[in-house]
Image (tube, rainbow, N blue to C red; front, side):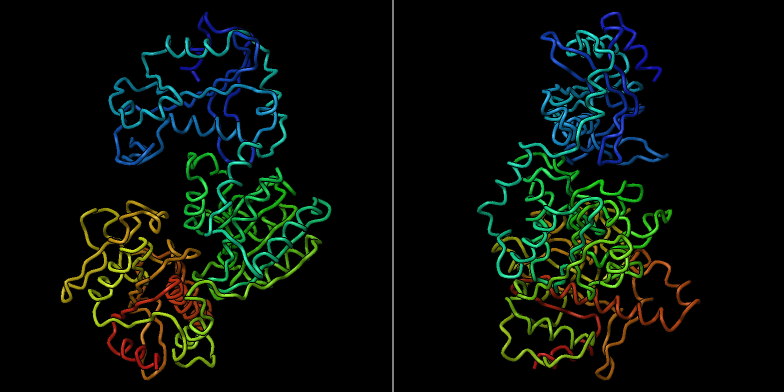
Length: 570
């Protein structure tokens, strides 16, 4: 604040201008460092947003709006300060009714008060973002003061800030119209059969939900039944109705992918606040949101984050919303911390005295529309016994490959058509490329095979990145998403001996947090721990083997398992 004091005390800035420090953006954990309010030269309300950074040195990266600097004792990637300032301004424009109805002008900028060398942070690579939010360095106090003065000519004694603080949080018509236009005519988000019924049921409940009349809707559905299609359509419809809504998942991959798909022509950050982590509602007021749409509800946890905050994510979501819609498949629990279940949701819905409804999505739109293939997977992995002992009569391209190289080549070939085929694997290999970008993570030298995990460059957007076919995905980056063809490497955590599927959680890589805490769990309740670990491993491969709409190719590191899978095909 010492640095901004020098700027604000400049003779060019009105002494009665409004000032806000560490302003918390509603519906978000984000805070704006410094705000100056007043009137512009035409006596219109105007606000300047200043993002402050203590950085001395900044480096360029190859990623849009991402720089690197010294944070926490090490060089780390972080968002460009101009981009950050602009996103905060846009967030307020899109969701604060006082701003978009009273035509309050928001002008963002960034001030790096310890930085003297702007060659990197002002690189042409970041010019788009700097044009949106100009950037000032340590020796540019006068320039920053002049910039603020350009938009704050007269003081307002904080009146504009008071209007913003009291503004109703509601999506703007502009944002609603844009999102609505993106879904129209997009075949990826067309709803049919039970999807439409579930959608209309949720819309109906939203119209009568309130803090005093909470509503909970559970939508059951297996892989490929269109849970996410309904969820995204619901989000857009709720925003179109100018309701305060959000799409919620525990796993960040679906959030990142659907956020990216909906953004399209506009900057993704404009709709980032519509996509939230399941741990975002610990301190939320009751009914803070009109609607919360929870995709992959089976992945919900009890506690949140490294410090185990909160009480229960299901309870917190129901409390924070007037209508909570949970899309659920209990056979897709894949970590020891997953608590999402029908019974858990019903328990907290009853405690909140909410009106409860349950629906089922049964029509299969993945795996070539074959419910038989899903039943065969359940039977083959010995998750549950079904009548589908083989693949006879099932129209789905399933193959067991002889080598990982054959598997790779098949996926590379299928990927040429629509760039929607990828390799995935059980998390049984350490993530060496995290610290050494040239290291190979999954290696089978006897087959001329060596590839990296996908997480290093593309993170949770791996599945939709054009060149990511050259990397291997895992459960954390593909659950809730779909491909044309999926190639699955089955690790040593699942093998077959004498016709019995045997799982071994100790074969998982130590970096896999799916089984974090298993050692203590094993000591306290050995039988239950082994049962849960067995279910997690089987469910993981069930998820991986049901990502493909048109086909699934597999290869196991264990020869007997490959032989047994071929026999199960019939």
